Image (cartoon, rainbow, N blue to C red; front, side, top):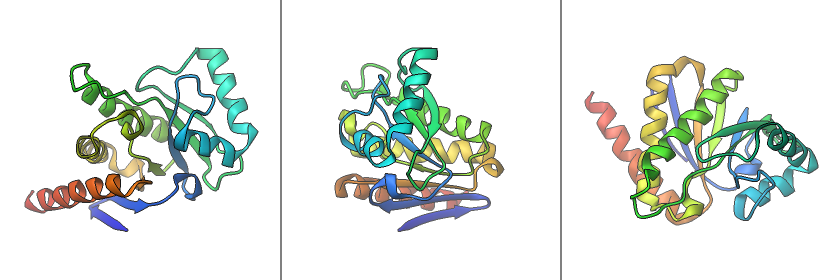
Length: 187
């Protein structure tokens, strides 16, 4: 585990399966249908049981498919977290389709939804990693977006944990987090 603590800002980096984390909310890099796709999205749905899908389908009936960077809150079913924030991250298209801004917006939308619902501990996956986002770029956007959000709304969120499933993603996040710590010490 790697951590970064400054004032009230607590950011952690861990390796593992996000569906097993006991936090107020885990973030699911969801399919726009919200029906549980491949990878970790499918694992979250399978491990959490049918209540998650039922909440997702209710949301889809009320609001349509989940758009890029949009966030939806559901039950966590039988998972150890209290809630799931489903968000659709952008697909990497070579940096020509506003992907970086959309990814930052996805993080902000998740954090704003957490604050609105008084969810104080959040675990994020590497949003965009499942959609060919370069690991270093994904990590840079993720950590800088969360740090920026916490500087503005720091007392609304107690801690943010990034949970990386793949070793390469973890290494990228580790490098960027170490650089963030060095920059913050210079401020």
